Image (tube, rainbow, N blue to C red; front, side, top):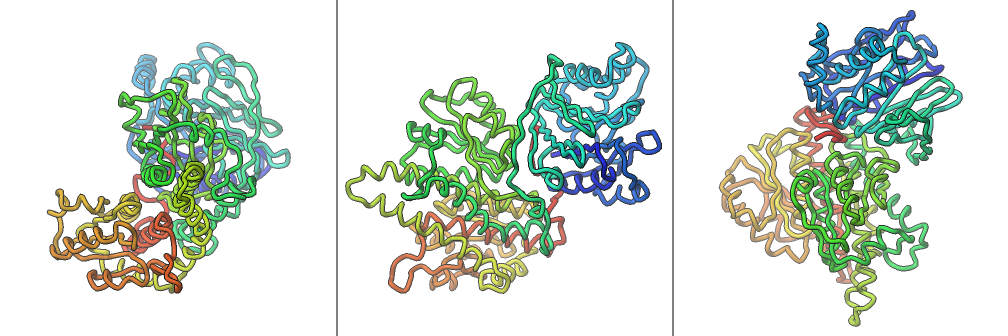
Length: 633
């Protein structure tokens, strides 16, 4: 959600802060600001809206120096998204930025008022600066000690980074829930941020703070302190495989479009990373992994996730049940944590999170760890909190995803779940005397390596698929609403397709299992309503065709997506989008395992949503009200 950047070093501070904040824009925000030393004083510049609003305020602040500065992008919680509530906040000589929520802010607010003082903003964040001020003026604490003691007085998931006007060249950060990452380069200085992406221009090894950690950043060093005891501690560095050049648009008009096109690379990178170490002598042959060992010994798996990650988890349920015969529950983490779920000692709980910082998913994992039930996770970020809190972690290799609406990270999650299903299914199939199960697994594995080629063909500008997507979007952009329907593997993709359209185009869209259409939603259908039917030629095809006919009879416009050589569906719909494969090869064998259809359907729907959004002129990469990494409830 909110983004933090801090810097002490040789480079022009304003340049480093602005570049860092731009690296954090993908998290979503509605105001921004920076604080930096100038002429012996800390200046604060902030504004509602985008970072471009504060850039002119810093035009003549390009000097180099060791004093440093902090910056922030705010996603409003307490208080409206305006300049008054934007960070940084200044109380006396203390300046700070804050991520998260201070749950006991009312108590602190009363304390501030009792001393005859009045906060300038409506935020809970500013109140922390008053606590530091009281510790320094009334208890005569040093600045670092005042920050430490103040942090112990607040409750809730928070991170704070602070400076003091009398201590130039010093930045103090403290974490309890909301992430903080640090890096130090002997030539460039020390940096602190809410995630690793702003640091990649300066260092490829970062240090993740744990809950209850403090960090003191100076030009020539960084030190970690236990906030509870005040004693020094160590935090090992984690090497980040991402390169800074992957954070740029590379000629695309939007990050989202770039990342849609990067999905072929995501698939290849994830396959190579997981199978290269093992040599892949057998289908789905992972290197030894404790999480996979736990899965192989259980008969029950609970997956918890939120949003897009939950849709990937639903699809994983289909694959794991089919290939591995494993009982799987795919649960919304935000509901699971507040229920009374029945968990057994021999089961496994898996969290799926793009950022590895999703608050609800993290809370479930932490709670289940206390019950001594094996936990594992799938995430795109090494060193993230969920990766550290889980007993074992599997990584997708999507690289940095800047667009708030997930595309390639979703594909990476789907792929990891399929790989797990294939691995577990292969072990089960070894004991199948008919050989049928092993044959299907071997075929799926073999054809999986062809998917990146098919996907590149589909997304290529001017391809039959891309042209059909654009034509369908142009014709339906002003529809009253959209239904996305599918069966089997296509059902979770229908949910994800509807979410993408809502996220970036701000139109009403719902995803449904096609068989549920007649159980209520069909009442919505009329001529200015559009239904997108996912109809690949799979085991559910005939049933899906029947649902399509029900839609047609009600006069709704129909966009159908199916195999390129489908003869039936194109005659029944208003717009047909061909997948980049035929039903059968020239020798009559199926072109691709139906289990792999989601890897083609999902990017097609992402591209459709992108086209609608650009036609409507919305902010595709940073949709309103959304945050990339949801680190508070």
